[in-house]
Length: 220
Image 1 (cartoon, rainbow, N blue to C red):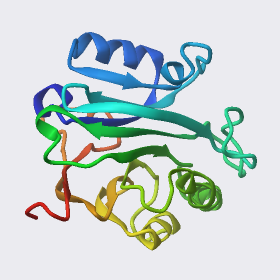
Image 2: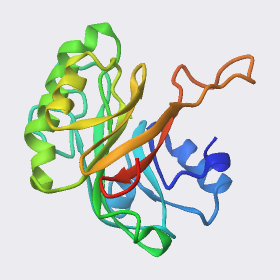
Image 3: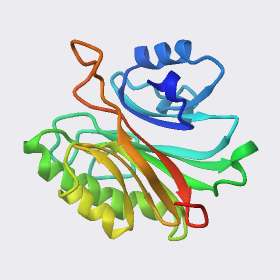
């Protein structure tokens, strides 16, 4: 899927070290990675699954990046199962500057990738997680920051996560519980879900979503 479509920026969730290694071997020389280990220069290596960001280094230069695990003391580098959650959850983000042939098509922006609490019983935890994002993570980058948000939010657009992000002018495309959103002047256009129809057993209960990132002075 990634090899065929070659998106410029990819958000992954539940990314084990084995998956990172597999994708690095499958996509040599094309993508660079932002992970907890790359942010901490190898000093922190989570023992479990994590979120990661892949980006096309020929078209984008990564600036500051960081992450936080979800708990009552966010932003924090420890925890991950706070707010009554039962699973290790986090948000990772990075600043990107367009370069090369993308320099005339985009402006610098912040890209967020979050994985929130799953299942119907996690709605209270998700409400607290998105509140923490709203109150503690988004303000880190200032009111004028251009923002793009992707992730596995584990609920549909009508839930508290969608309502909270729409308050901050995020809109875009979602497939059930997986989202790509942007806040103006950035927009997601031609968003769509990628269906796995050829496999007898789908590789995941999630379907990837993809779209074009454009800006207000570009054609819709």
